[in-house]
Image (cartoon, rainbow, N blue to C red; front, top):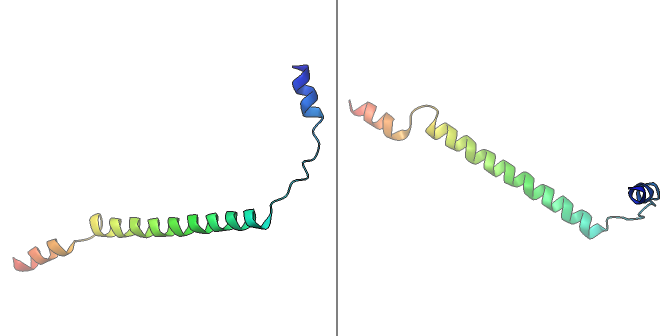
Length: 66
């Protein structure tokens, strides 16, 4: 326990950085996630509008025939 406390008290700065390659990879991953969410949202809206909202093309054709 004393060793753990000493280890936490003796923390030195890491002097670390993110190089340009890593930074651009993070930006690319965020952009890809954003595009994926937008595409998924479009599919959800299409599904809801065709299956849950209003009449579909098949039901409107059968209503006209009557």
